[in-house]
Length: 186
Ligand SMILES: Cc1cc2nc3c(=O)[nH]c(=O)nc-3n(C[C@H](O)[C@H](O)[C@H](O)COP(=O)(O)O)c2cc1C
Image (cartoon, rainbow, N blue to C red; front, side):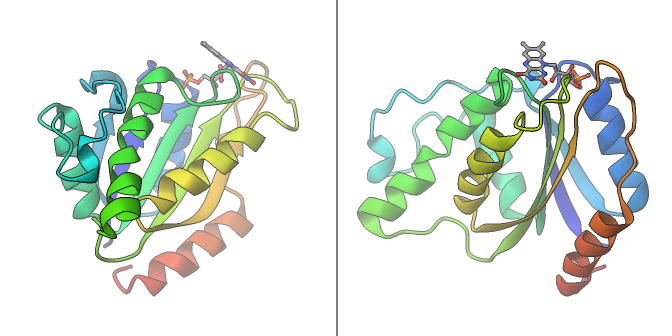
């Protein structure tokens, strides 16, 4: 069993994104911690730059708990609907607070995360626009990178306004499983 943390960012606990996450979890038996970012209190980053010298002074909000859960995980699974080609605001607030890892590394050369993790992104979007997830693909490259995490797969379900297909393709299943086996815990 691999230890995973799920960062979930839909306001609907039984919506398209939740159903896609369920489908994913039914394919892979992972021990995981679940964080619903809509239930978290995460202050917006105010670019005070304190994190260049010390731990972010605002980590006493739920960001501190999220960081601890990520530290103890091997796999980071992000599940989010697409809002304006990006992520909903609770997820964006959390992402901006990850600036603390970039800044500390850039100024003091200190890396917060000791070992490499793997990252998987699950998205749902209402439209069938072929470009609807282009922006988040780039965003999550950067996001996962700040946790020393290798972004291995993006499972994107589009057209949820009209279709409800939450299946994971065999190709994606095989690819993810290969990485999970590599972690040595699957
Ligand atoms: C504020 C808002 C913005 C949205 N922006 C987009 C968008 O840019 N592109 C798109 O295809 N769907 C967009 N949608 C639709 C959602 O991505 C889609 O309905 C999604 O599957 C909802 O997932 P959920 O059931 O987990 O909430 C938006 C929905 C909302 C509420």
